[in-house]
Image 1 (spheres, rainbow, N blue to C red):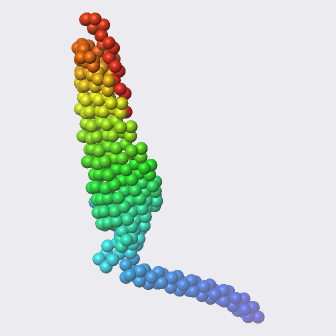
Image 2 (image 1 turned 90 degrees about the vertical axis):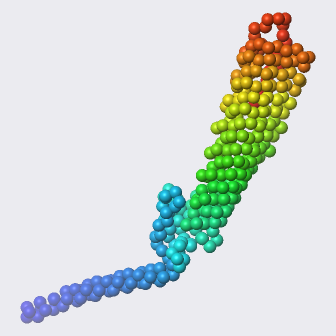
Length: 294
């Protein structure tokens, strides 16, 4: 009797164990099938050109990660680029288009998934550059149109204005000359919207060295500048016919010089802060103050 009771009580336990084994077996089969499907899908994708990771070494030594499709030679064609700075870009080598995560869009020549050759880069800010690129850097000749209406046309190197170019401001002012690292540097001519013109040397984005400044009022200064200021030796000719040749300091007549009036009368001597000092003869008319810089 007891044996029959034990036998009866063991049957549900065996059924539970059998059911558990069946569940485990079913799950194992499902997981194996899923893994097999993933492997099959990956093989199909791989055979059709998909690559989960392609390492591209840029010209400057950096590394670009690519995920997407490649051609028969293994070159990336369409997918996503991941840059070392954390940004990314959708790329399509067939159309030559790069859509960056920051909103910038490029369309043009590509080499190793980098901007190279001629193309157009439209910034999210509204600025547009059209011209030459060298391995992701603006380099060569091109036109940069700023969102505020300014335009630069000329030479670039390392992503900056370098070489000769023309910058036109929205108000009509222009600079034609040399640049170094985005700053006016070398020989150039700046024409202001009011008609004033400076032609001469620049350094560090300022007038430095010898140049000629023709003011809108008709005054003309030709001589030395230091950091945009008339300093050193030069000649200032006023529109009324007066002139001064000598030394300047911070835009004022300062030092030894000769002042000439339209009547032909001259004074040679020492000037300080725009005024004559050390007058030996009869009183001399006060010189006209030199114009301010534009």
